[in-house]
Length: 323
Image 1 (cartoon, rainbow, N blue to C red):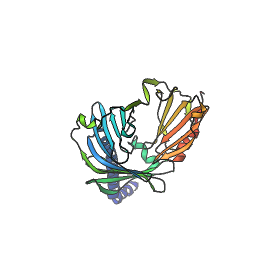
Image 2: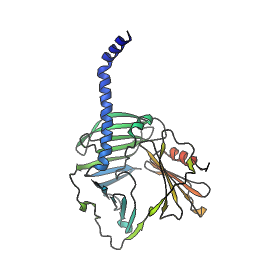
Image 3: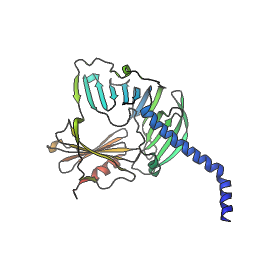
Image 4: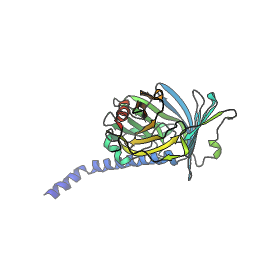
């Protein structure tokens, strides 16, 4: 009897269930294709980035070889700026100040969005759904929406081209659905090959001041495991812990990275010799929130693309214990 009932249920639900599973599989494949395209494809285009009531236009060219990622971003509005990424090295050119800043490139890419780190865990803290389609820069794309299930993270909409996997439009929103920042390509094309000349700086750097910031070349050290975070926000887990000597600091800087698979948060901890140089309080720019506090003359700084209360909660939970 139970066998007959189960057969009837399968018969009645087959079409809906199979289409739902198929749609979910297609959505996950699309997200995986996007991850792959953002880092390993050759492309160029122009996009607009909107945050805090400011509209910025930027041109991007992106290349990938067996040796790593190469990328060049050029601002088309406001002060002239160029950012050139060559594998793990980032060169920022600021013509207005006649300044060149060289630093270690962070993981990720030049577009104002994040790569998905753990697709399997996303459904635990976000409600995922395909939310229609759009046409961006002459290309059709499918919209995947991530609705946060709590106030510890932002929501996201990603419009992804189904043929290339390229992210053509993104929107970040709060728990009320209000847009915090957005990105959209106005022109875009895939490339078979990107010549080395595409990544050269476009202005003479004669008489420029050169500065190097970030980790020293041989500055990697063993992290101090006594630094801990008492209460992580739900869904966040430890991604990495490192400690380095930094050119901007006489003392080592501990760097703790937390992630929920989509959003990431960095915690920086460094000893400060002069208490006058310790910063306190919170501020934000677009989706990025920062919280700083003092703990026994150590500067605790939390930075992440998460709501203000989340970085404050993490910052207040940092403590030191060798137990």
